[in-house]
Image: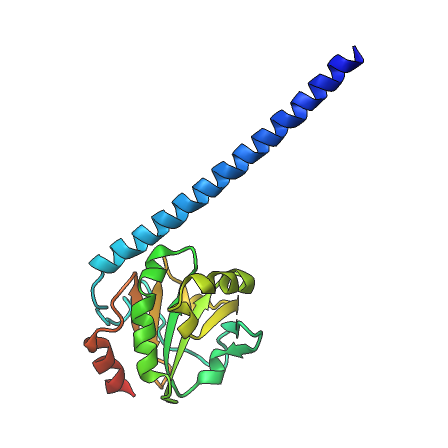
Length: 204
């Protein structure tokens, strides 16, 4: 009787071990599938996106377009933990992009974002702020997967401001030196297009 019980226990242990191995193997396959889907999705979006329209925000969608730097509560920190508010960038042209690592349309436009940023990287009259609501560690863990993100000034939002409320991401805002939001663009776009550079140069 005891031998039968031992055999049953051994069989159960073997069965559970096999089940655990199978589940782990399934999880790995699902992860590979998800990664493959993400890559294909990003490449597809990159093939169909157009340059941004560079239009002013719709008054119904965004009735207030002037940033009050004294009362704006948008606070964010870089990946090293240094905190900032918009007040720290008052007097500059601001290029603000809301994005996330899980957002394929966001990642699809990052190569163009990186090209644009490099053209103005040393220009002290403009600040590029790439803001995410994700935890810093999530962003850090994703960086090795995307060399374009490694080129950009990334920040984690601490306190968001309703002025920059948006129905989806990616969303990009361009703010002139007087604090007027002159562009709100929702969705992926070719930000390395010459029209964007001409536009930014005209307000710098």
